Length: 487
Image (cartoon, rainbow, N blue to C red; front, side):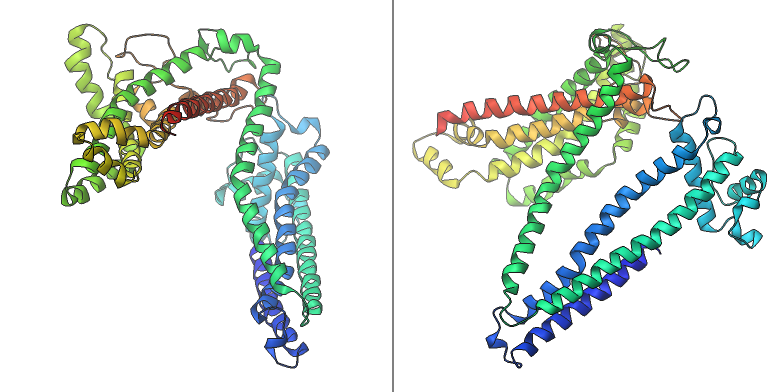
């Protein structure tokens, strides 16, 4: 049964549970709602929650767990000969799912008038799937076709079992809620406790998501370091991956990538932080309301421009301009792709991140602090330097950190503006690359997720995460130490 149908049935049961529970509660006190412990709506909400929440939880867990268990079951039945040389179980399982999806969409059984694909040959099914737009990573074999049929049949059976279980839980919850809907039942307490749990769950999503991201990268990084030396990864000065033979000829040193990342981000921050901070100070302290109402939205437009557009701007305009005006006359290089190109364009992109947040923080400084400083004889510029900026420093540091994190994680501007060369060089007019660019390149195409050349992407990502976390901790320490002078 399709999931959408299950959700519609659950919605109908929730509505029924709401109105029947509410009516039963009122009926239990002979229609006098004043004798109820809670307002009638709480009895209805309790009925809907009792019917829907357990069923929806079961549905969510089932939808998450079923694909993993089904994949493992099908893979365990596949013979070793079903995995071609140079392929992996994951790639073969992807083909099994594609064939099964083609079956479900009707490419095969609509033409042959049957749902039994076991009698069809692989050539006929392959042609039908191709006609339906389903592309396979490897030629369709009899083993893959048989596994796809088993996969499709198991998925159909499990979907009906899931529907029966979920709807059954909803019916049990509905009956239980209706039975409990009596005048003395503390429905309001139950509903408010349920809402509290829902709010706690919502607040935990960010924490659990961060934990899941870290653990997913950590486990794959551990697999990488089982195949590749961590000393070579962190201290080797060469980045030269080779996909010819599971890492035997690869040199995967992160230092050139880290250098390119920090170099480009440093130039971007040199551009973005002064311009953004000065713009924020002017807009909040000097500009009139009319000019501010025009200038601030125009600055924030920069944040809405897609990064690919910035990349094209760097490739077509900024890169050739820097090459012709500075790099070539000074003998520093002849390439339009350079660290300076990517850094300048990225700095322009980061200006609204710094200016908009800093402007909001500066405006949040109490007016009494300005009035007190001016009343003691300080000029407006002295008030800004000695009172407003120190008071707004935590927010300004947060804006700078946000810009730094955005710069470290940028990809498209670097690809088009700085190139893809991994090197250690001080010349800002040479092409370099960043960690994020190499993460994308290592995971592009039909890659073997068991090889170090692919697993290194997770090690790169975890390293970036640790660096960003360290910067945040250091900034928090500095801000707290500085704020102690004002407490």
